[in-house]
Length: 133
Image (cartoon, rainbow, N blue to C red; front, side):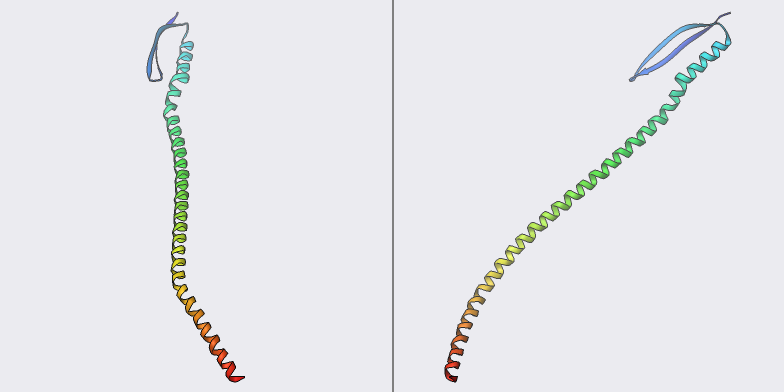
């Protein structure tokens, strides 16, 4: 006695659904049980695992993206620090030049007065020496 099993399988390839159908002759109930077990193992069980695999793949992808975001964040922080350092160096240099210019403008008259004061002291000391000796 033969058992006829209508076989209808639905496969999905890249979003396209393919329907395979036919009638398979089986000679005994043990073959029928093996056939259903084979379908269970090859089609149904892997389909049950798909959501878990998708979930783990999504978690892995999120972890990778998060790591990349963290590294990019650190890169941006370093770039900002470098820009701030270069800007502060430029500001310090410009302030330094500004102060040097101010100091020179203040020191020049002082230097002249100091030189005049030295000359006056030399003359005065010269007169004191002449008076003593």
